[in-house]
Image (tube, rainbow, N blue to C red; front, side):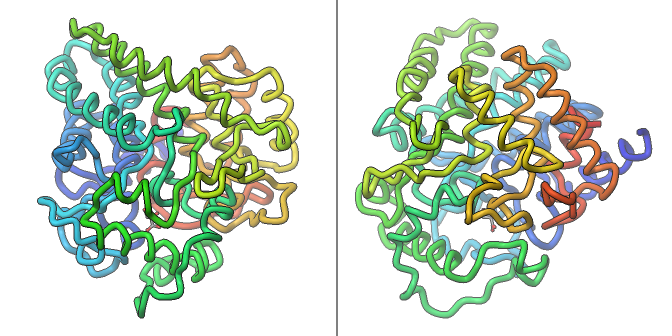
Length: 409
Ligand code: DGY
């Protein structure tokens, strides 16, 4: 409806802090990496110039080694923990020391399609920076052929049960006193617990102590797990990056090689026990033995198996509103606790792109309809209870507004 369109645009504009967009006021007062890429897609429906600016501001914080950090602390805000002084990365602008799912190339290509001529100069300048970021993933995170994350926050799916097995090996008992801010903004029962936060902070302290030496973090850090989510997102993003590079007249054989290598390695994430793509703890070599929404991003990368569709239907039919971030049949399922069960409109949008590309139009349309129902009934929340639709987390949320304008609405 046009009233919801207006509201969604007002949310993007209201969360605009001048060249970058915060995910939501209070809970997330800085620029977050993948949130920002989705914000750009949302802006592209009514302000193409502002859409490109969002991506340009994100890449203005790129590290010399190519990493694009997961948070950029443009302006100090005491309402968030852990802030720049905890990360201690000594960058200008101040940033965190890990990355986040690389959706920027995919979003840039969608934005470019809206007006290829108007976007040509913008993407020409951005393209080599995205290449450098994807090379960073390849060099620093793809040691086994698929993507491994060094912190659950890097996955974007912070407290997903996927990470429990790796988190069990992290000592959170010596992190000292700190005050969480997130639980002052939203209901603590919808957020990660204290034991998890202690471990999140221990991982940040390790990174800081070694001067954010990414090789050291991978080799000796407290946490290292293969992530199907980023593996599939990066595979697809490499395709999109190569397609844009080809149009710009670049040699894209290196990027095509990255995509091919990820595809060749993807079967290593297939767990015959869970009959799905699974996370693996590289400290022990063991699978998490979980299935989460990220497994179905295989469609986005075009590496799905014949069994995956049946698996998807089974999980989906257990809830009213797809797609649950974690398996409703597992003991770990919590329908309102962040990534342990809730449905996330932004993940739904990514899933639907993949489903549609693979010819599963009815599934893509079902996902769109169920997502639209949630937003129409409750507004632009961060995530929703997949069983009864209860709105959860932050309100007036940027990426929920963005995917309403681009896909769900
Ligand atoms: C948070 O603070 O919860 C964020 O998800 C970290 O990126």
